[in-house]
Length: 206
Image (cartoon, rainbow, N blue to C red; front, side):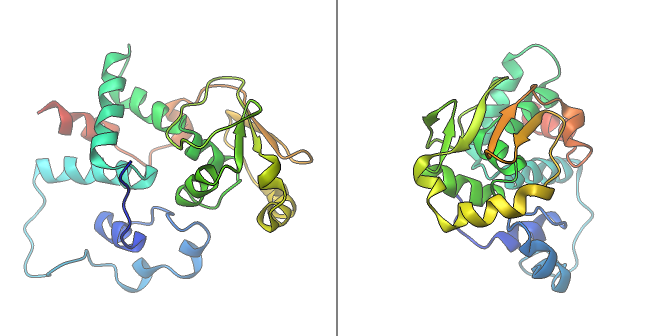
């Protein structure tokens, strides 16, 4: 699967806000704090059109979850096939991705880092090693480190620092055993108002 390999800070500059693509480093060494302008030439810019606003909203979601356009569109098409509001279905599907769950549990500082842990075989779901970041978890899924992952220095440091991690409503974590559990499926309200999913739906509806 293709993936974006350019500078993460450039994506934040495009959207005009921090997307937390570098985890804690976004608080201390953020390019956006020094260079708030969007990348590229900066002649007189016209006011963004309705289509431009829709595109910006879509790109903000896509950048945040680390998806390429084709993969993101497939998730949208799956959301449209489900009953209910397409925008709500889409954000729930994205939240259920295992790379996002690993990030939400605090096993990684960012989604890019969580994908790296998964690709390296350090994460297990329900006792089985999983190396596909786009896999979806279901209710009652158990997420933990593999035996190989538990032998790393990263795991030892994480076991101490994760004690103060605040989790979303739909996840729980046994901090002694370092085992997370999906106690409920996420709902749009769990994500908050960070994304305007109505604009995303409008973008793909044209």
